[in-house]
Image 1 (cartoon, helix red, strand yellow):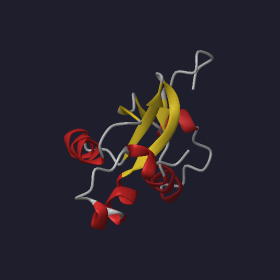
Image 2 (cartoon, rainbow, N blue to C red; image 1 turned 90 degrees about the horizontal axis):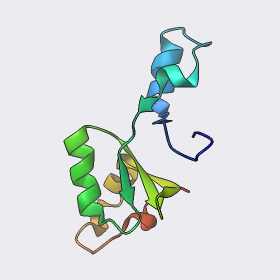
Image 3 (tube, rainbow, N blue to C red; image 1 turned 30 degrees about the horizontal axis):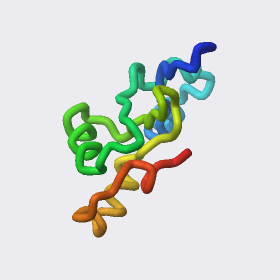
Image 4 (cartoon, rainbow, N blue to C red; image 1 turned 30 degrees about the vertical axis):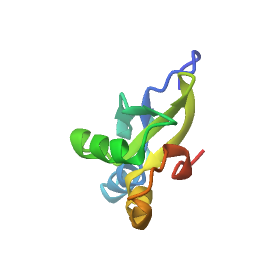
Length: 97
């Protein structure tokens, strides 16, 4: 995050794991992060988040509240909660803050 509280990237466990497996233990976060993360509003229906996961081929969406970072929704969490998928579920119910 910059001084202006702008998100510049997201680091995933997969990116860290790939770096470690490759023996790049001294690699910097900025070198493994996904730049320009996809963002959604906290009131976004989960069904729309699922479409974004597929459209952008990402596993993480950054949730904004009033334009500022608020939390993260992970594709794996949404998939685990798929038994509730038919309900009108909004992002905060799956979000990590």
